[in-house]
Image (cartoon, rainbow, N blue to C red; front, top):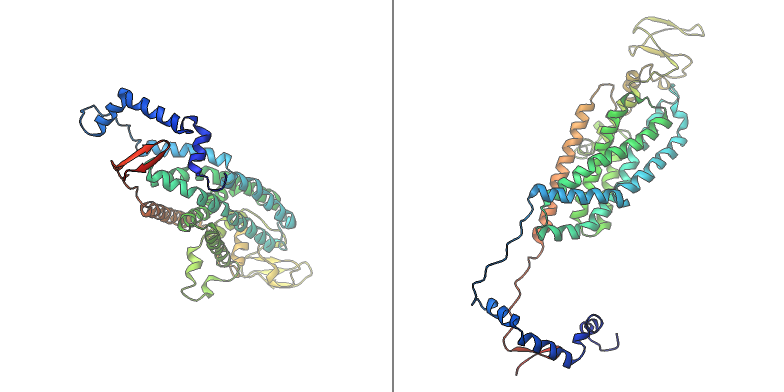
Length: 394
């Protein structure tokens, strides 16, 4: 544009040659006045004609709007890498890298028991961090979603339900791709692979839900990302592997029970260790006499196993998976030999429901807080068109 040019008139010059000169504009206006359409419109706007109203469009119901939003979200799930595609590509590679670092842990012996636990820690903790991409994508889409909800295209619950329905199969698929790598490289028994996938997918949904909540809670995505990283890192610290939850003072001990990784470690730990048998330890009857290979006589401990050549009892974890978990529980409180997978899954489900309800509430609050459209003021009769400009009579 040249200096001092009117942007509106410049655009009109580009798109409509009829508004370029005063003569052309006058010709268009005169043609409109001569035609009968202008008089008909004036009569209708003045309320002098009793013309039938056009049929109103039928507003889609909740189920129909949910279906439309579901189709859109499903299409985005396959086309937008921030949704799931990027994670499905990068997370298995990261897990494979750490699997090669801990490749020796695939051996089921006493020496590799703690290293198998450390590899499981990476497998369960790292993918949740990468779920931060959900926050970025959701924050990006929030502006258009709020506008569409206010425009009556669909309801807030329709959007949340649709995204949740898409989340379930996509996160299960992501969990399966991640765990098939860890189970294969880590030498974990596939006996409980299905239950591990289900629990791990629920863990990812918890982190995806907190990402969605933070995405609508904060307009600035950087603030939401910092809060998400704080939530993720706190979950790692209070998972029961860094320190015992019972040793933490109140009220900070609440983090141990209200953050998800503690419950995931217990469930997946049971799946990974329970079916296995670990060499280097032998079963014995508690209290019975045992003679080691070097001729040393000893009494079998109450744990029901002993280890040949173990310099200390710390390196002797157990023969069966249950015995190993019982020994690990002495140091890592979140692991137990009891089968608590159903209870752990229910806790994760409650977290998901609470976060989804919070997401709906914050989203609806954002929609309600937006300024409502105002009525357009009628044009003053003293205003008239002159050429391509609008002026007011003196």
